[in-house]
Image 1 (cartoon, one colour):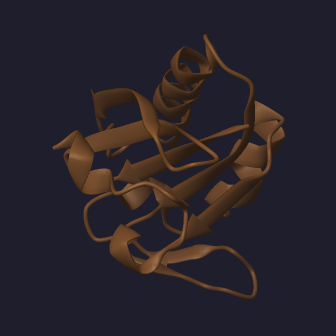
Image 2: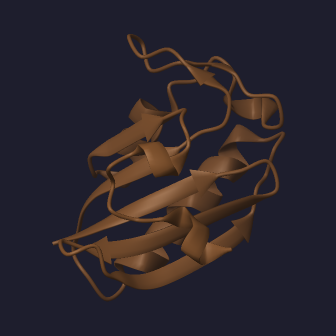
Length: 121
């Protein structure tokens, strides 16, 4: 099984595909469209499709900037990406990508998703 970890930053979207052992097998990076939700979703979709090209992916974990309401999933604040304010990005991407998606608003080092996003820098 493989998983995708994505870090949405104010400048770039960085992503990697990992396997069950935590081995990184592919990396992708793209500029972040900050003012257009449709362009942001399309960029994430392109990254996911690229990372799926050689492997079956079971789920996606996404680090989002700002404050995410844990109960509703809605991103309440996002200082550098205004287009995601008031959006349940987790549900939107899950519906679009047809894969389980989990979003979190805390640094990747605090998540147990099996990928150190710092490897992509």
